Image 1 (cartoon, protein in one colour):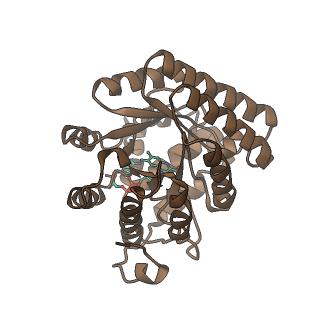
Image 2 (spheres, protein in one colour):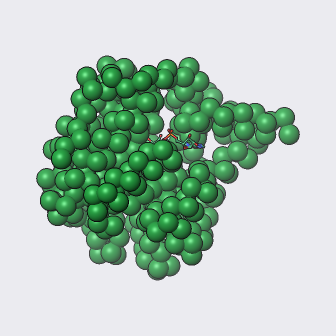
Length: 326
Ligand code: FDA
């Protein structure tokens, strides 16, 4: 059974306009002037704590340990992107090697989730590959796993190429793909035969309408079809599996029904959400016997990431403003 979606199919879905607020917040994510001022404002720092347990690795590991007690596994990501110096990429790699070792020492099922531009992709693709290779090798020897985040559209081709090379040497690596991009149909089709572990997300960046669905309803429908396609195919390629990374209750219910109806093996998928978002839904999923992995972010460079979180839900902006008044 094939549930593929084309650009033409997507246009038939009812349309909801993309909000001006979302575009504004995503544009602000890259504004240095704003970044310098906002990261010092106490009311903003307070509101960030909703989404991250702290700026340091210790806080993230403690949060991971607390979640593990509740039956929730985790992924750890140190915030930061687009490094400009080779030494920075080297330091980020050393940091993640340490994270893998500390997770093992603490007996935590805590994977890592990394951004290629934080590992030097803007500087040199080979530098980035070598850093990723070291992380994937260490994850393999520690019995752990590396997720590669997907950044904005100009990085999709190089990121997929990096993933392909890494997947050839190890099964301990997975890749995020974004449902808002039309090309993801083709990328899923090409990657599944490799036995790829795919994390499906809606997509968090500001992209031109020529390459990405701009209507939420279109993205949701595309997500559903892509996920069903991976479920259908996952059984046929060794290592292929799906991380259903969304907080969208309606999508989760629809996919839950698909999983039940098609007897999808529990080992071929897991749900994933971000720390601090839809906590009650997280608990409900675990209580209903589904596997859930929570992505915990930490680090000092949180501004662009935080803007993307605000953009996902405009009411978050009111939450921040209420903090200012208080
Ligand atoms: P949607 O945005 O429709 O939200 C559904 C509901 O969830 C909302 O109605 C609201 O109730 C709640 N919600 C969602 N976001 C919220 C927020 N910020 N604050 C409060 N409530 C919120 N993106 C990317 O481009 N590359 C990547 O590598 C990743 N990696 C990644 C990993 C994991 C584990 C997750 C969960 C997400 C990502 N993302 C990502 C982010 C993703 O693209 C997307 O922006 C967010 O998950 C929000 O989309 P939803 O699927 O939750 O749906």
